[in-house]
Length: 354
Image (cartoon, rainbow, N blue to C red; front, side, top):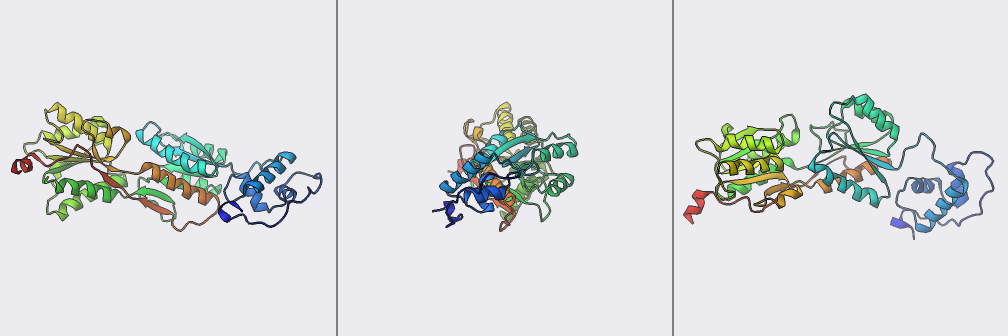
């Protein structure tokens, strides 16, 4: 029985056709092993859909005749490209890519394009490595996408920073829904002065999270107060400074929703600086659900962004494009969910009513 039922062949192995008179070709290997050329291609590229016996027979023929893939052919690897590897997100993404690459018997290569590197140099380096496909964390420039397309190397954008063109494959998360669910949770606890520390305005996912926040407020009949929205970079230090601005107001918020978990950890620091207790005096909700936030005190309520699952889905999509397949859709959004822990509770005035 063929693996996955996709390599069905009734042909019996034949005796080798004799010593080759010229260069060994993929067609010669196929004839020698008694299989089709596409089957040999699957074995060479580590793709599934070939029975164990057939794979062994083809590999024996490849080794016997010393067949090598042509210099211009692509390597059986997926290249994972980061703009910056020094992040807590990178490990979760790599884990998802590894899971799918291993299942498909495909190698993985991790590279970093510096934020200030010349696009022509970095993309030429990548083209020179001849990956089967590319998974890029954040946006590829128009020039980089064009260069990859010229060389026939398919790519997928992971969590794009802006709305990609209709023909650009991508995998993202339901950021708007995540912002809405976080805010709804706080409203449901009785909070009415809910602040948000927003993220970079030029990045679409942070705009979507803020839009979800304001939508939930509007649905509850609460006005979005500009004094309760502070923009900050995505670091713990900047989250701390933004929280100090919010928490030193005369009518301070009873809850803060942040654009990422690092900002939320900064809110924890600011609360301690001001003698406030979480969640008795202040409720906090983050976004991402990085592993570390389950171990802080108190454990952080946060929107779970399924980075590992997103990376796995993006890798599956990239590999299918590398096989020349046409997937049903090239744009995927993986659902976010709210993980409720101990950093949220009813505001003080609501607890007094109990």
